[in-house]
Image 1 (cartoon, rainbow, N blue to C red):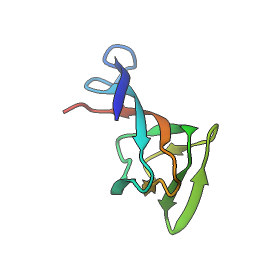
Image 2 (image 1 turned 60 degrees about the horizontal axis):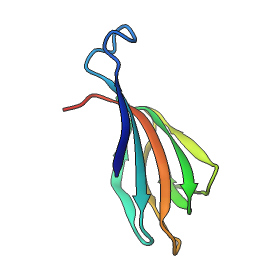
Image 3 (image 1 turned 30 degrees about the horizontal axis):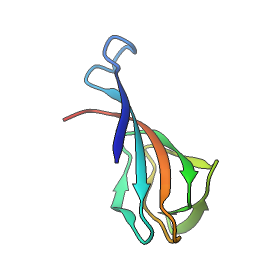
Image 4 (image 1 turned 90 degrees about the horizontal axis):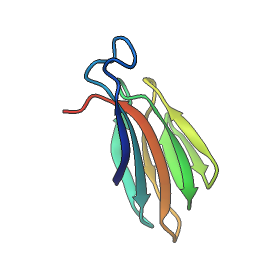
Length: 100
């Protein structure tokens, strides 16, 4: 996982002190997973697939995303991800976080 950029939101958006807008590039190798199951309460974001396929498991529904597709992650999102393919999956993830 590589952090590509961050923006400190203090003074940019009222009420967003101690929050950052963060953009990461995440590579999941074949057979790999991004888990365990996790939620996005307090950490909304979006994901965009650049290469490969990602399988998203949420609420008993399995959805596959390939290049050019993506999904939102909001306070209702509880999921885990995996790469069932034979090539690495590469995604760009943008979210709002509260750095530790």
